[in-house]
Length: 98
Image (cartoon, rainbow, N blue to C red; front, side, top):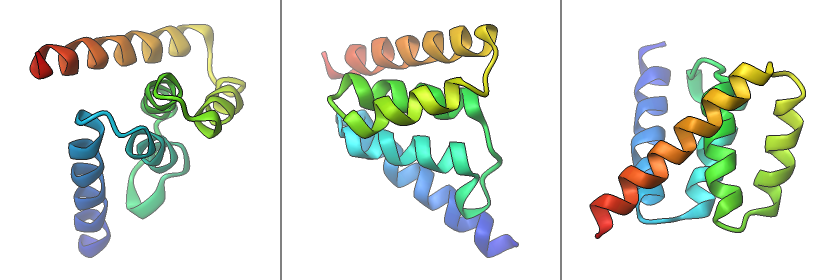
């Protein structure tokens, strides 16, 4: 279990570095990790929706489909929370790039 947790942490950290650089595929990958609980990560649909939303804004059609699919299992409040988190992340990342 310890190795799985280390693997999950490494995957998330490496994809986050790429996501900060605007890599839509990295954002999509993060959405997959959080929506499926891959590599020992707890399923978190709000976090998954956030990353699929960011990837979709980066042009990923797959992310658009995944976002719509998981939204069916979320409440309106959860979707609003995820959208707010995506917006906040985009603003914070753009501020760092400027």
